[in-house]
Length: 274
Length: 188
Image (cartoon, rainbow over all chains, first blue to last red; front, side):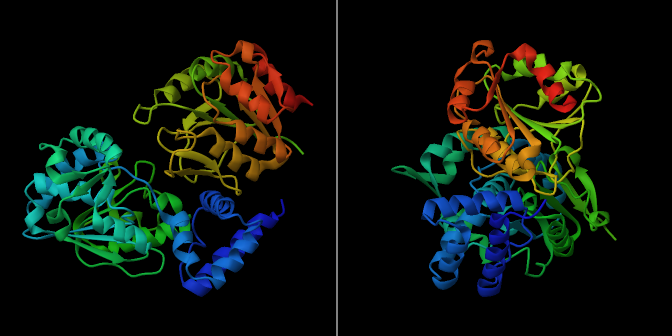
């Protein structure tokens, strides 16, 4: 079947964004990218993706708005509580044996996963020895993550998730309600470094003990997934842990042999010792 | 050009309706079937096991990036959208809810319409919301065949009614006739 005009336009737009702004979405899974670009086109009132491309190229204030369509994920704190329960019960005992710890939340978006881990580490008494690295390609998402502010109406879900994750304190201990917002406590993010990092184009981070990257690989094609998994392999210490999303797997990666399944049903892997 | 896939969307009453239709299909049914049923996000996917036990076709939870095979029923996992890529593989996404749902029927139908065009049939079954109406329209617009469960035979008539309004050329089929209508599509 021949490629539709719209599909051609999308390819050209992604190529233009890469050439001009060096953001590379060319190997993102197509169906979702297309859905998001068509939403942006509708929202911004362009008749075609080509028209939108001209605007994106010539007006750089369009870029952050486009990035918000292409990257931002609304997540939950303690999403998939059983994942956090497995970290608590099975991974934390190993992490306790290290005098200092580095944790990388790759593709942190608005920071839901980062704050979840920071709270879990606090509860498990590991916070003082840990540095968190929270990375994303979207500067406005990173700013939001750094601010640690979430809509108050989401807190009920976060609280329930936290409880199911085996949390042994009250979530309300970690935030202050301010009108319709919940502002998470500063000490949680004082141990976090927020930085711009692309799994597509940037290099590995060093000496991580835990990498949590959930529901990010799902948006990549196989080639790009492979690159990211390779980066995680390079970034982790021997015996370090990698958590991916519940519908993601290392099965098809050429780097799969760097890892062993550690908690299979929660998609937690361990970097092999060799 | 022959049909390659059927997409089915169902909501309230959907489990019962699917149990009337899918187990009646023969083991050599030649198309892939992709199904989105609205389920609470945290429930284990018990529906897959239930259907697998009753169907002659292979039933499985759809996995990200797997190639879509004929004669297989793919169920959208709870809390993920189910999409079809243009290369005939499955994609899952955790994008925001659409029509208060994840998985959303519109997301499956629109992506499948894009990938399969006239080689697709879309079916909207019982349900209490308007998810799937836009999707069925997309199936029609791409040249595919559109069906809705006859509202009188639906546990909740709202969803097929709204889909029919959005896509008036859709054919209305009684629930009990659905398996034979599916089979006839390939006999022609």
